[in-house]
Every structure is written in structure tokens, then in C-alpha cells.
Length: 166
Image (cartoon, rainbow, N blue to C red):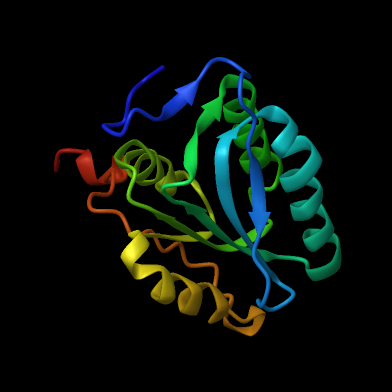
């Protein structure tokens, strides 16, 4: 297990399983969830994956509001694998992703993987939850311009920017 400063992180056991709390009051194209406890493979396979697939089938592209607050205790290895598979299988199905967390290793992971995603992604602190909710609901399909927007502190420069002049 890699600690994150709060004693929480990716956990390799299934001792205490968690769940996703589905948040109500959002438009039909928004999947809003909060991770509670230690998220395991079952939480992904029985809750999140079917929820995402149902929204994708009904709405086309979906917006994801993902809150990892103080109730979040980490991921099992199986959940981490399912999270990676979910991202790869639905790479183009997300219009926007808002991740809300103060957990440092989550914030670093989002910043690391955000440039690889086609969807617009923003990272918010828990104190910015209202802004995250506003941002995730602001997307409308007619605004889809295929521009990648990553709210990360540093971006990896494209390889062609590193070629020395001739």
C-alpha cells in the first residue's frame, strides 16, 4: 500500500468493502458519485460500470462528477484494475470529468493521467465542490468542439516541440 499522508491509499485486501453513493439532482447526462469506504472490485462491477454503461446507452456522452472525500478509504487492487479498464473501454464516452478531492495521491494521479484522456477534465478541492457541480452541469453536446482541456499544473510538451531546429 502506498500511503497518501492520511493513511489511505491503494489497498491490497478486501477486508472492508465500500460503495459508491449515487448523488441525485443532476441532469440525465451527469453521473455524480461519491466514493465511500474502501472501494473494491464489486463496487465497480455491480454499481459504477453498469451505471456508466446505462447512461452512455441513453445519453451518448456522459459527464462524471467523482468525489473522493474524507469518507473514501482507498481502492483494492481489483478496483484499481477495474478503474483502468473503465477508462479505456469508455475512453470517448465521457464529455467532462470533474474529480473532487483533497487526497494528494488522487490529485497527483489525476494530473498524471489527464493529458491521456480525450474528455475535458478538471480537478477541484473539496472546498470547490459547488464550482465542480456547476462546471459538470454546464456542458451541452452542442458545445462539443473536440478540444482537450486539462486543468493540470504542468502539461507534457508534444514531442515535436522538443525537436531541435535544423
